[in-house]
Length: 102
Image (cartoon, rainbow, N blue to C red):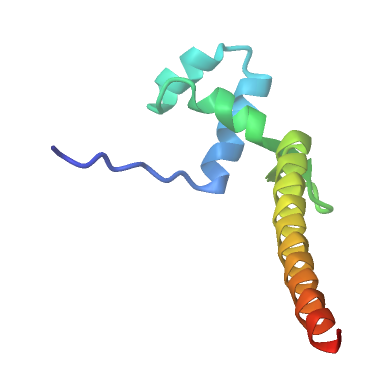
């Protein structure tokens, strides 16, 4: 089977596409067709990113609030797993040393 190659879009392209969606009055499907991107991709970008104003009148893409919250949850889950593993190691160590002194 042939491998599918995924196109990689620049931040500028995504930003312009989201600007078009916001200001043109066209539907997402129409803009996707005009830009030649996969159906549903614009909606996905809208969920993942938000347009942020930079100090000099420019704009950039930042993770949406939901996406930022998901990343924070993932980071905290990794940290919790690490702490739980450390705790189990300490419990075993205490058990070993308490047997020796008895």
